[in-house]
Image 1 (cartoon, rainbow, N blue to C red):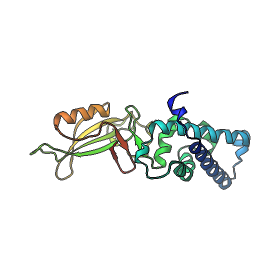
Image 2: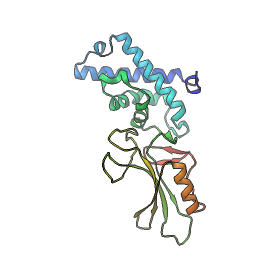
Image 3: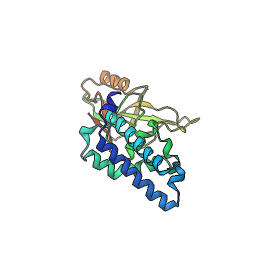
Image 4: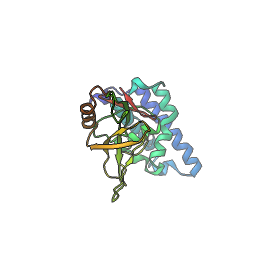
Length: 222
């Protein structure tokens, strides 16, 4: 077993499973769908609820910034997990929910997440410029991407699918911000660490966190 599986909380898994079961049953009633047919039996339906709950909790142990949570984790899961899953994956495809869907599910719950290089999560960090008499009063590091076959970059926001097939892979952009709030693009980087290293050379003393926390409002230091 890996470390995330070993640290899985049974109470959290149960909360996920119950929340998802209730959300699926409510939607099935609304749409007059047969859960037994969709999941090849009610026993299999419950197995899927437990599988998804275990999968999410194992992922959360590695990716959720629990120190930034203000809610009790199992209670939050009970309240939000089921609806967040159904907002990301249709009921008829729920049995196919996998690891790639979990970041969007977590963001649907407004959960703070640890930023990992390669995760493609949406960064949006701003820090004051400590360099006097600079044209920039602040620096901004932001995840951006463009649609396939288009050239114009657009910001990624909290809740956006990191692996949306309609977009090119995202990059991390560094901007200078003047006193009017105007952004001037400095450079795109392949990683947050690279963008952070560059801005620290351009503006010694600027403070950007080594490991950001991605939140619904913006990304803050962890």
